[in-house]
Length: 274
Image (cartoon, rainbow, N blue to C red; front, side):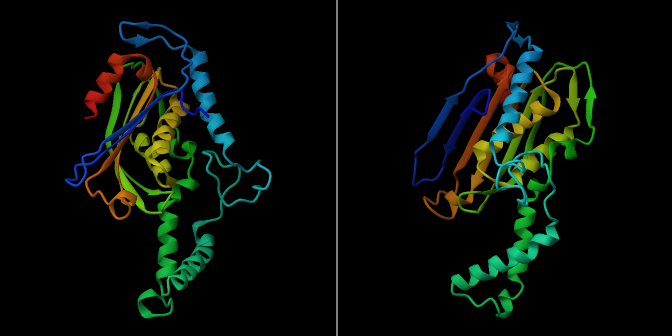
């Protein structure tokens, strides 16, 4: 299933002396961009913008939502717009704490001993904080901070700190995100770019999907002529378990619109975010 109208690449590198392996994967997905490239700029039509927005909406609809059979009373969903509000953070603590208490017992620990007495509740509150992005929408964080501006040069917000939780092992991964876009008569408040990163990183994630979601959310918000996102992360599932490569880092990128179609624009962006 194609979720991105553009170019996505993933590379993982390690500087560990015990391993010299490097891997990279690149994928090209279908591009439906009407327009022509002239002097390094893409003349984007309204139709192509709507197509990118349509893909963004389809990505949300194909995930479970409040309109899906059997999910009418789900506490939250993975889609970006909630049709019903989840329970409050406080309402979820008792059930989560009970689950952590059961986990401690299954590990052979005594949840009643002094050091673990309040651990289930603390762990429940921590997990709710790590996943608070489920309660937020793009509309909430934008809060009207989208402005009409006759500016069509590159805008970049780089080295945005990111913390997330790997959905495969429930251990952290963290790193930095750089986001660039070419405005189409609209700009967004710079802090809102960082807030978009926060929404999607504060969920159970994989880095590849996180990169795509950030790019597509910016398309939905301001319909730019192009978007580029680069994420560099360190994953504890590779550091403290498995291959245990402490110095390894994973880099993912998503390019949409003119960033995909025009090599000069893409090169300028990638040079500036280094």
